[in-house]
View 1: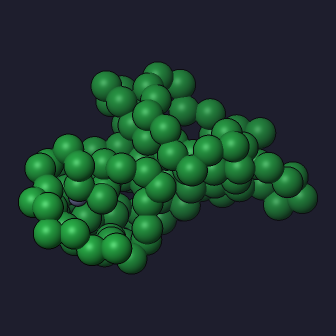
View 2 (view 1 turned 30 degrees about the vertical axis):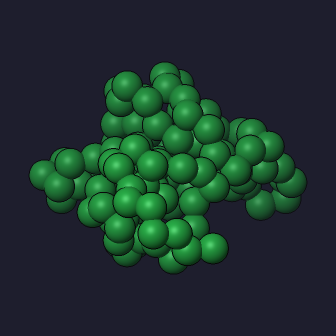
View 3 (view 1 turned 90 degrees about the vertical axis):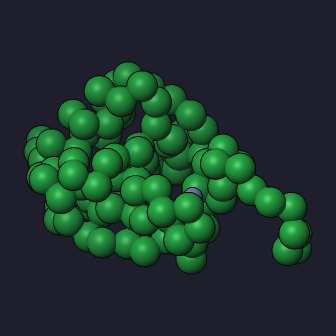
Length: 119
Ligand SMILES: [Zn+2]
């Protein structure tokens, strides 16, 4: 349902899980192969408010319930400099990020600290 309610910054679609990929412009920046994982790293730009999100997605084939993702706010400058292999470190240094996926049995929660990307 559409509503005419004006949105403040904090109730933007990008701040309210679950997230819909249709609200973002996604730019793939590569894969993180640290520790033999295959993490897909992308920058997602919210088409409603313009915020940039560093998005990390990983899952392990053959392991059901291993899929998980993390996304945290990133500045334009950081986004153009970040390398896929430093994405996890970047997320861990943030005050908070969103995470979710089958591994966590959630479609999106706020978290911080250790980013659990390994099996
Ligand atoms: Zn937004």
